[in-house]
Length: 104
Image 1: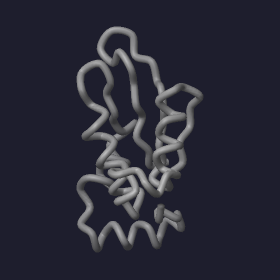
Image 2: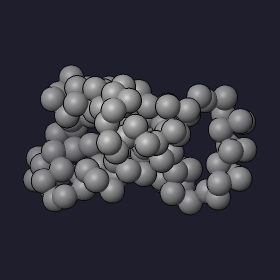
Image 3: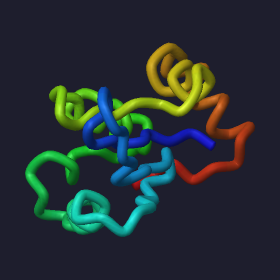
């Protein structure tokens, strides 16, 4: 699965607070997870509403949810490669081959 995992206290006592899939699904029952669910569904959100594909969303989350106290990252190298390293054309091929609906 291609997803970003958001951790609180990543260096001392990591606590997973949310997971967001490339399909835009949020798992977790924390305030962070609830907030992300609301933001993804809110067409008026000034930032997230601009993203049309899960790849863009995951890139945003890994950048914005990494501040020391909270860290967002991939659970393995494969999701990171798909989101960060594939060219746009290779990514479109991957989406088609995977059968996932990455449109938000």
